[in-house]
Amino acid sequence: MSLSTLKNRRERGFFDGQFLIAMPGMEDSNFFRTVIYICAHSDAGAMGFIINRPQSLTFTDVLLHLEMVNDQEPIVLPEHARDFPIQTGGPVESGRGFVLHSDDYISESSIPISDDICLTATLDIVRAISKGGGPKRAMMMLGYSSWGAGQLEMEVASNGWLTCAANEALIFDRNLDDKYERALAGMGITAAMLSAEAGHA
Image (cartoon, rainbow, N blue to C red; front, side):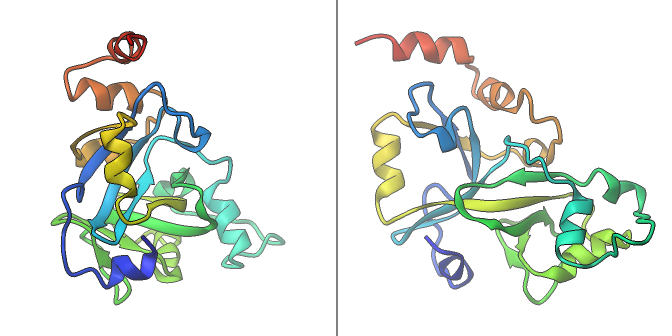
């Protein structure tokens, strides 16, 4: 599923608003031990963002790249923008930024994902955050994760992913190190239990 499909979606699929939690046997290194928030699912495919993989870039790096600040002058940011989280959303369009955020900020280009969460992929939200405005809860993703028609359903049926209802607090939680374990704990299981199950023929 592409971003344009997300903008024009008219139906909500079974995995909309769900977490995908990678099983231990996940062979694709892009998704090993990942938790993915599915933003859209339909007959056309699915799209979402990895929520537990950090990026080496800082928000200041992003502002410099977008030429919103001048590296020849002192860069002064509001406190909440100094450590604004930049994460890896997935392998598709990995050079493009997307801001997943609470619905207290809406622009003409914002796409509602759920009752409480929106997605904005334009510079206005970056500019607002850099000036101390913007949404109360947000994080920037570089790239996104995407599946073609029927692909995600097949991967789930093949035991590649566990699925559960998304937890908004976990989505925006900035502690990424144990987010995988905490997503599993929300289902009442541990990674050790999954490893044991994966080892049985």
